[in-house]
Image 1 (tube, protein in one colour):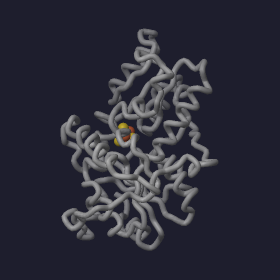
Image 2 (tube, helix red, strand yellow):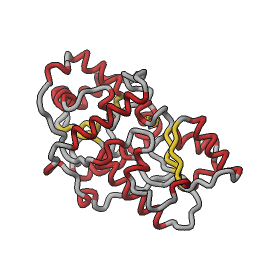
Image 3 (cartoon, rainbow, N blue to C red):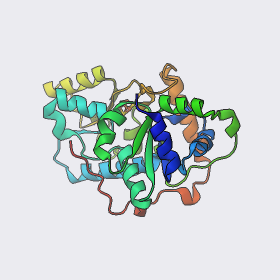
Length: 286
Ligand code: SF4
């Protein structure tokens, strides 16, 4: 395990921002978590929703610009990308070469706040070990939900002391809060109008992904858009979630309840605006 002391020092000794992965409500109460992270030393706390909104936009653009491409594979999950690269190299060309919401948000945030250290708080190890190292310029550190809980315990930061109204700092956007549920990307990225219903496959878990790729290879299925994630139920099944053993349906309910509850708040000046992402390169290289 990494030295979390170094990360705590990075947070406390610098201007810092926490980028919370959208699975956070499974482990941490909203909005109390915002107060807890500020108490830990973060100057700002936000989530990935605006980054996801820009990824959606970039996906739709890419698909429209490649009308002759027979298959598109969404690529926000580094485990899925690594699996395809290793086991299905012929499919790499179908991975949509757009960064994930994590990298997108880190890039947007760095552009608007150059002097901030960015710490991503992750439900899995793949984001830290496979993906974040590619974006060292934008992401200064990654901690998992499990590590965050250990840090809270060590620092005596307890949820019960933060039962007040807190608001995320900029930049946020509402409708992408369901992104970590399997199919959240396909639902929020407005690709429905670009494909027929039976051309879209939403699935999770390596075995199901393998099956789908084999079906495409053999010509048994003619999917054109794959929204596929490694973990059961999507990122809500991430291995570094403290409450990872909760039933999938309960996890989905938690995310949906959070999306509904938080959407009642007025985002006001905290809402991310497209111009704040002006000039940012959202392309990825697989
Ligand atoms: S599906 Fe799992 S491995 Fe992939 S990004 Fe989400 S939490 Fe990480």
